[in-house]
Image (cartoon, rainbow, N blue to C red):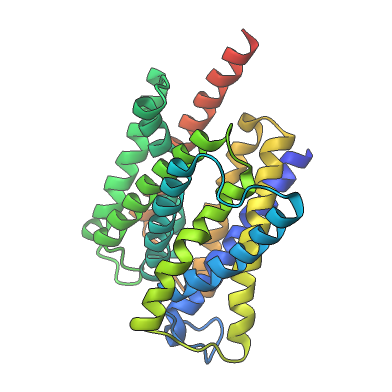
Length: 305
């Protein structure tokens, strides 16, 4: 197995660790994975995550002597604002949907990235990509309607409103990713990463100060630290994966996250997904993966022309 695939698998595992502990902290006493945990508001979880990321970014920027606020400030701000909003919505879906469903819906972001890029960056989309996009959205429609198809009371309920919020989160992530592309030739990657906590920290701090704050106790401090540190680990290994191997090779392994999430949800949270829910997940993954493969094969073909 080549290094790029190993890196992307490590990245996926690190992101799943983050999602796992976000769900534990957001659920609090309603989960049985770690007993005695307080329930944390999503903005506070994002605040702790952002503070740790911000400190790491600042340290790197200082050592490398990179301009702190970057060059392309307009698109850096767009990346920060839309990225913060998207992550907040995603964390809410983690708290209110089965972890496998929330994770899979978030994987729609590359499709929205492509759709937005057709207008923003004038990128061309192949006909086969449109077909795979349609497959993914059929999966989303099935997922939203799955609660009406299944009468089995043993399966975990999937509220279509939370699915819709997840789709909106993926859409905003698509805008953030296009903003990152706009900055790739003007700003250092660590500056692009830093703009997320730069925007998120003051916003989430206002929520914590004026609305709700839960003081961590005992092991909860460790969980908060793990969320922040593993976020950085996930981003670092994802970057290393795409730098060490061509995108078409590593992209399929990125979506192993849905498999991790399915088994974590089943064995740790007792989340049982109906047949319609599983079929929806498969359709979404087929649509997203197919779009990514054909998009990357087109890019590779154009580079070799």
